[in-house]
Image (cartoon, rainbow, N blue to C red; front, side):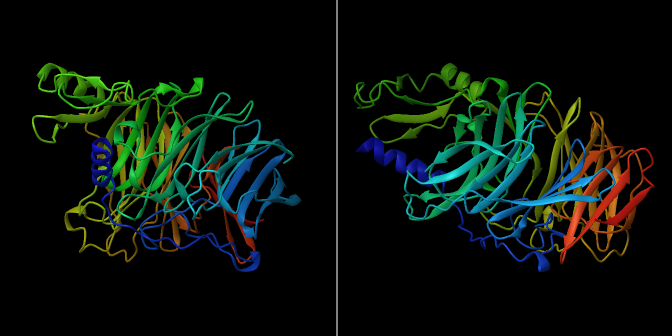
Length: 486
């Protein structure tokens, strides 16, 4: 009983933050749906949304995957290389809530989910469905229960792959905790796409040392050249920062985590070794031991005194290294952070995160945002200091920039794209996130469709009242831009 009481206290400490509500995603009629500006979330809410617009290069041209066009279905539009429509089809959304689309170059994947208000472990809450390139269903992988009441709640969903493994990073509202509230946090799981089995997952309440962020208001991930998973969370409480998490295991063997919680108790702690064979009895006053744990976990070991000299502590051999890419002021758990995280990628030398932020020194009094670029060397440690720069708006500009995209041209050149009023703005960055050109701009719009690099141009699409527009910026000459109705 005492062990349960202690763990309930620890859990309450971990999850003591403000609850927020999210409007459910609504599928609307194709004729009046617009995805323009859906990449932004600072002016429309404090958290991101799942991406519902995708552009994919195919062998014969291009494909649009639009998940907000028809109720319970996904619209697939195929074009030739000149963007002439050659076919259109709709596929069923297998679970009620759309999460994300992904292509690994060989197959297509759709992530979907469903709510679990009764908190039943038997309810399927996440499903990844695998298709061939003709959209014939092959198989699926599922997660059940996983302390999830609402998948994708208060954030987004992204996927990446490494060899035959697919990694999903998203979020969920969790089962009711001991304080009577349903809290929100990030979710990560990995799938073997050969047999569509889940090979690793993290959906529990734990610590930042194994990738737990709460609330996690946006989630981004990549697999770098060393086959390591790196992700970014927009945290408002634990931690309250834009947090870069690098998993130290190679994900090409089916796992991103190689650590496990470990409980250490003092010699006079009363417990049954038969019930807890994994607990380790140590002298918690041993300074060398405490120091060694701090070095392994990259976090302090805190002793909790429960009377009569009895101490207990729980820690992990951390499978991650974590760093703050953009600090956030304000109160722990305040949903308002004045910041958005837009995109994340890596070069040969650095991880680069871009987003928008208000003046964090005047968080509650500032209503204008600027672009930020934060970069850190890929071999960072917890003591590293990222380079954080801001890109100021033109004088007297009445608009804040929208959440930017970071488009990888090659391993050491990127195009950062954002909107400012009725203009699309863009600038070239090098592998350290430093600007190499002046800002270019033209009249146009962005959407939640992340731009792709295809056939010597950066491309994305918008949709407004049934009208699809295709935007292109030439990568050889960034002054050449085209916009066409498709």
